Length: 124
Image (cartoon, rainbow, N blue to C red; front, side, top):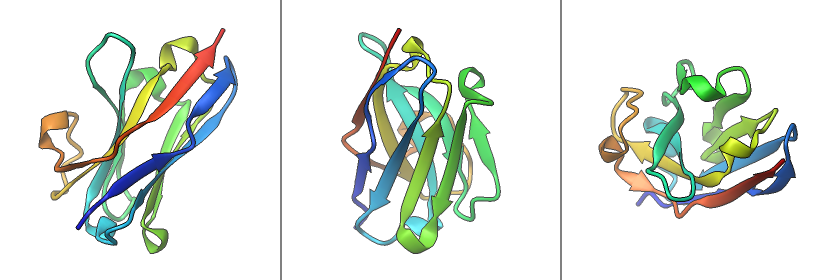
């Protein structure tokens, strides 16, 4: 059974970097499309990035292009989100999600499994 656990969040100054990790303890990660979403305070959950099962194709929301990089290591059942040049508006709870399908969908409702999230706070 797929169980996702995020880590790597924290407090960082604007311009800094963090790397988030998402581990699947169920060891079925390698066949899933995986996405990162975030929910800023008082706002709805939004798409950040997604990666296909083989890591060959990725998708990003425009606001993070050139700053964030999603990658995966299927041997370790782990997906990463490297976040550089962080801005205060990146402050949010970041969630990892997985879906049984190859489409890099932006819609949260199309993902089957979710982690509990990790807090990222960027100070100005």
